Image (cartoon, rainbow over all chains, first blue to last red; front, top):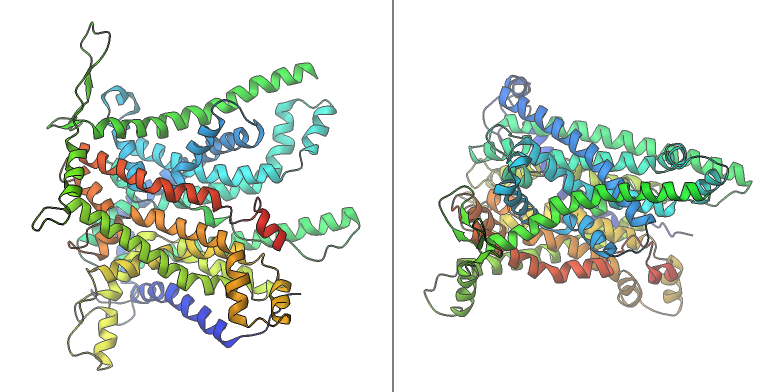
Length: 294
Length: 320
């Protein structure tokens, strides 16, 4: 069906764009192994900067804080986002439903500076001092709000694809709604929940603007610290940090992609087996719907 | 059955309460506060503004004292447009932001369209890997990707590109590559390219090759086929990708700050400066309001055309 002729022009274009995407990152990685102080000069191989990375308490603290905020924000976003997805996918139209739909997805398309400013105004408002002012909790709330939008979109599309007759059958057979939810609905939407959590976690780990606007002196997340360091001159230590992040992320993405592909294959095989037919192809997989970021 | 429905109705109420309450508190209310603060007076206080209305004990209605100074500032700059020597910093920042965002969108489209097209036309087994390779840089830290360009473009003889150019004898002195508009543009295209490629790919992968074959059989040359079949059918992907690049690019703050030096004015940077060093929160809020107003049209466009995944896209459904 698909005409897969090899066209030299296509290959050249693909290679050129991949080079554009990867050469800067590969340069960063290469110079993380320098022994010298200069980020663009290779003075012999050494792991010196990786050692400095581990001894840098300020940086280690920032990483730990970012991991914590990311995990809590992702978890909260999965809870709030799944609830929002249910409202959008199952509640139909009611007064205010359009406003709700707009509100839940708007953080994705608003510039972060605007969201950040609006949340600073909330957290510094005299009537809302009970929220605790700026600080870690404020960053967590901001990240949860932003990530909720992404989780909502992911879970909502999964809920709409889901075969509702499974739930109806269970209800008809006398299963209580709560049990239906946990025994049938959750397993079916589980891939979207996992993908949503991971996406939310990365978004939170990566966010600079919201964290910087909402941070107080005691709440320096990793991006806030890196940004400050970039203004104070470049050191190969940042290259080492980038290399560690790229390595971890690549590993995670490859593993997640493998897992998703094999799950898809198993499901397709099971479907074929159950239906006794042989469909022509396996559904096309893309990783975690990345296209809806921001 | 009846009891179950009653239970479902009550459960539904509580399921709905959580996201409603969250979004009202952390999204709708903060936006109302932006409007309020944009009408406030800057003041040395915590928070640094006088609210546009006050309520003394015993008052039934609040006393209104809106301050339109921030909006007047923007309005006056508009009126002074064309006057030599006038201070037009906000207008200049707006103009530059729109220009850079538009150029970024255009470049992303020119690079990303053939790229997405060729991925969509490659072997089915390879597509997943090719797409994963587009996403991989995007999952790594945004700040560190901008940092990579700081190293590459460094204007001293230590900058990577300058070193290569000097070693090759192409230039005699290091070029001023960093801290200008061009550096910001490169950084933005680099950072936003995946947002363009992914919706375009999602759209182009559904394009039925039989349509192209039919066009060729009927005597259309490849270029004509592209202009009259492929391009119109991928309109939704183009709009979605362009808006996904344009909208965040207008508000971008980090890239101009790190790659643009002090000279590249952008409106996101003005908000940041008024909010931070200048402590003029009413002005920052007023600029944020204008930003939301300017971006409403692209956001609506994104929602109308943006179903690039094609699930609700009747047009490409017919085609595919």
